[in-house]
Length: 247
Image (cartoon, rainbow, N blue to C red; front, top):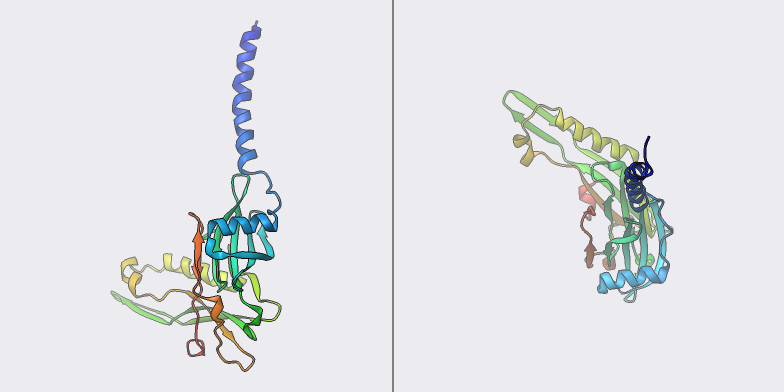
């Protein structure tokens, strides 16, 4: 017959690992709390990157339950961006930019469906449209007796500026499909990685702001700011294009 002492030991053997599992689940996987209040977020932004000078939270956008973008205005009149991640039971500041030129937040770096184009531009910039592009130059190569030709790619997403002075835009589904298809095609092409590594044009993003006359117009106070990035957060700068590059 099992003694009380042995029963206690067996019960402990069961309960201690179970308590550990429950603690891990509670710490890492429980549902996130609401985002911090405006004052708390501004304090965190300004302590992390004093150059931000945040004085007003404009808007907060939940991308999913564990990732959010918060737009802010600074004391110098510029418009900035901050990205927040729920991690270890706390909303943590992952990125701050003092200027709001477009960037791509790669929430899951290997999955284009999670990529978001994020921007925050002064409403007084007098723009008419924001035009975002996914581009690749045409490409021709020879490896041994094999010839390869890839046509150029240009995909465009146009948005009216009014009402979209700041935004969090999911990559269009056709963009994500093209990106995934080209990566998979490269793996199955049979060409030497070394041969293609230097020569092959890559997919690139770009943006082109236009005024009411359809002319290029750079919102000067939206570029060349200061930034903070936490380890493990991946972003890509979206280069400014000119009309010659997309026509």
